[in-house]
Image (tube, rainbow, N blue to C red; front, side):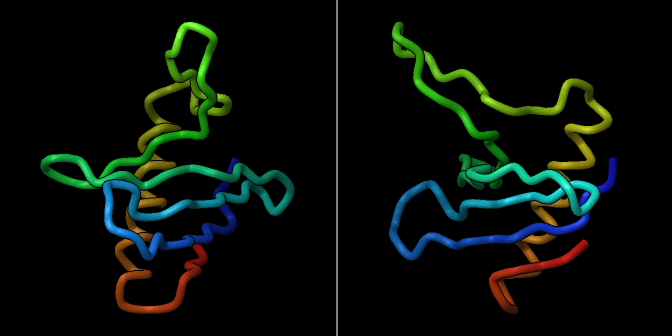
Length: 92
């Protein structure tokens, strides 16, 4: 499964959420609402989630192995960093 497009929508407000991302796989499947959050030391990727009845957040979609998680995280962060100096969309 290859990442064929990453679209970055930056947040214009102050706060920890820096951008919302959509990632397309194999030009056939897309995941929306991936978030880029500013952590204490660096930005990180948060997969789309929903709040459960007991107040916890559970991911709706997420990689199931470390290799895919790293591939996705690296591609999203690279597109985000590239977008800081260019347009709101980066293609991989």
